[in-house]
Image (cartoon, rainbow, N blue to C red; front, side):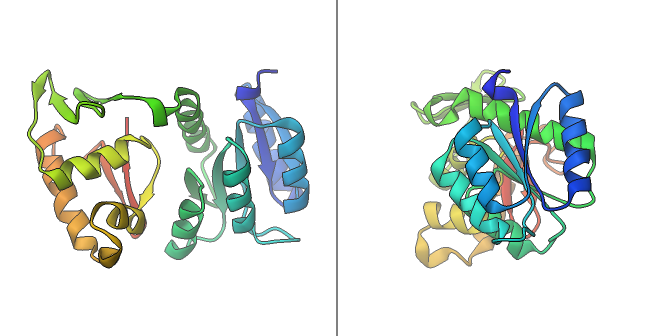
Length: 228
């Protein structure tokens, strides 16, 4: 089995693990199971999965600890699937290295779509990609140039900084705090209105229908993501 199709499922409920593993196997993935943080770390080291689906309510340690450890020690894409729906939990998981967050109960087809997206990003190694595309927009990160339908689009420095930050992790939610800190500086991590104004300007320049954005998406209370 190709390592790129191997998924680690971490949940302390056997029924949930069975449900997830059955759906993953039908979609062509190989599955590995774990019910504790300790087991998950062992299976990650032994099997090198491409992705991990992680519940936060684990018996031996908090799942957020596992998210952080997996993000630091491996290249697998971590997607949190949890009954915890508080914005603070989502922000914490994403800041610790999760690439996505879904709440229970979840739609299996949506989960598979998010997993495919995460694995595409993992394979393409976007940290080294110089040109990113979405819709009819091309972002040349090396030349700091943006084109829409082949025509150059003028962006302010802050607009470009926000777009480049999202493009470097296309499909992944980047939290408000991370964006504000990296673009405006540590003194502005609470100034979310800066982000709203800049995102609105980007949509006006790049979205087909700015009032119904499909690509520069807001995750309420959490952050922004750039969707393909």
